[in-house]
Amino acid sequence: MNEIKGRVINVSNRLPILIRKHAGGARLERSSGGLATALEAGWRDQPGVWIGWAGTGPEENIEPFLVRAAHRRSYTLRSVALTEEEIAKFYSGFANEIIWPLFHDMPSRCNFEPEYWEIYQRVNRKFASVAAETAQDDDFVWVHDYHLMLTASALRQAGVRARMGFFLHTPFPSPDVFEKLPWKKPILKSLLEFDVIGFQGDRDRSNFVSCLERMLPEVTVERSHPHLLVNQEGRQTVVGTFPIGIDFEAFERDAKRPEIAAHAANLRKRVSDEVLVLGVDRLDYTKGIPERLKSFRLLLRRFPEMRGHITLVQVVVPSREEIPNYKHLRREVELLVSQINGEFTEPGWVPVHYIHRNLGRDELLAYYRAADIGLVTPLKDGMNLVAKEFCAAQIDERGVLIVSEFAGAGPELRSGAIIVNPNDFAEVAQALYDAAHMSADDKRCRMRLLRQIVKDHNVHRWIRSFLQAIPEPVQAKGDPGGDSWESAAKSTERSRRILPGVALVAAALSPASRPRYAMGKDAKLRVLGSAAGED
Ligand code: ADP
Ligand code: F6P
Image 1 (cartoon, protein in one colour):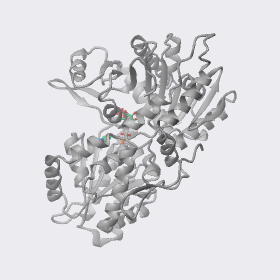
Image 2 (cartoon, rainbow, N blue to C red; image 1 turned 180 degrees about the vertical axis):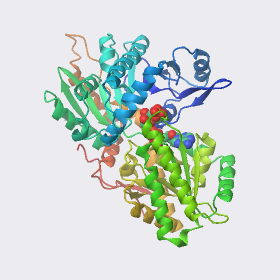
Image 3 (cartoon, helix red, strand yellow; image 1 turned 45 degrees about the vertical axis):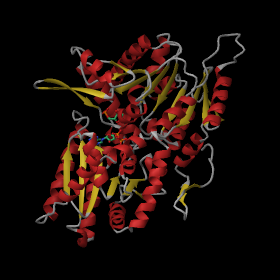
């Protein structure tokens, strides 16, 4: 890791744990969602502090839960309590009724309520003040995701001198979409107060830079391979591409456990011993669940011979249930499931099995192992870890991954997966048909390739490459160490030496890039071509 002498202080809206109230009291649960899953896995043995919301209000004493949760972790947890108004206007409102749909290219779903902006600023200051109390000069403050885009300026105003970074787990939209946001300039300016900003893919990074060029013309951008350097008002920010991954080894190891194998075999016996298709998502309109169901219905209509021989298990984890768009989505999905089942069910065969709950890790792994086809078709997604988890759990190499071209994982996994446009129901139906009829050899070859890519681009590499991009601390005046601009360049130069793969991963994710991997005749993975450099 880069020379962080102190600790890493992670700051995200959600903690990896959630305290859920129920009639008899409260219980500790694990948070779902890509951010919590990835960071929790990558951070397992590192010391530090994780600051975030545990789903609770200021009146609740959650300290005993935090202490209990910290027992099996190497870092401590600090919670930021949110009032009901803050949950409604910051979390549901600004973050999830404005930024979430906007960043996923769905501006017509945005509710640009001015009051949300007021509360968003207030809550960002609140998170920043907890971080400011915690951080020391030699720590690194790593802020995550769209909920907290204003924290850098608040931290600087609070006098924090630690270096700071920001990683966006979602996509970043094009300037034509981003400019619809009434508060675009303060958000861009505040982001530039971070020392490093990271994106999932090259397209997100180049959208961000295009927004800077259009909306903040005073900013200048330079290349410092493999990253970019953005200069604004004498400050410099490193802007890079850092595709997130999973803890491949842990998924593989756990998927191999005999209990998981037995559970998976049992599922196949009870659900389908022919072709089992699996979808696993938060119940979110970006995940393309209605579109997926319509594609499955089209498959059954176009290929009647598939009826009775293919079964879709769609698992959804309830999410953001207070927001109207999410309530409508649930109704739409459940109506479609019942329509499809009403149209096609036969004695002994129900075409769609619908599960609406958070699954435990073992149950999830058993479904991943049991499935013949992983169907991951978001309309837009920062990365999509489900696609990678499916591959990691496919230890028998007999599953096929179908993945949307609009998921961050799409370009990365295109050489082994079947890539589809989720809005093209006929294409998805055909992909399902093809996957169901693929030869065992072809499946093995593709899955081996996918597993190698997922293993290679794992969560540890994501963390390492991000931390290596942090520029050196700014030296005091007159210190021969030089200014932060030169230091950043030195630092990125060093990171290139330490981790040559960063550029390769970035290049492999470029929307225009060709597959960078292929399986040789000897079944060994080949890396085709070298890093293409910047976009
Ligand atoms: P997002 O961050 O948008 O939710 P990702 O696919 O990147 O999407 O991450 C989702 C994470 O949540 C994965 O780690 C996945 O295992 C987990 N998850 C999704 N659905 C469920 C479910 N029903 N039960 C348990 N975990 C789930
Ligand atoms: O990974 C994307 C993400 O938006 C995370 O930031 C978030 O924690 C997760 O999905 C789940 O959403 P929520 O925190 O609203 O339940």
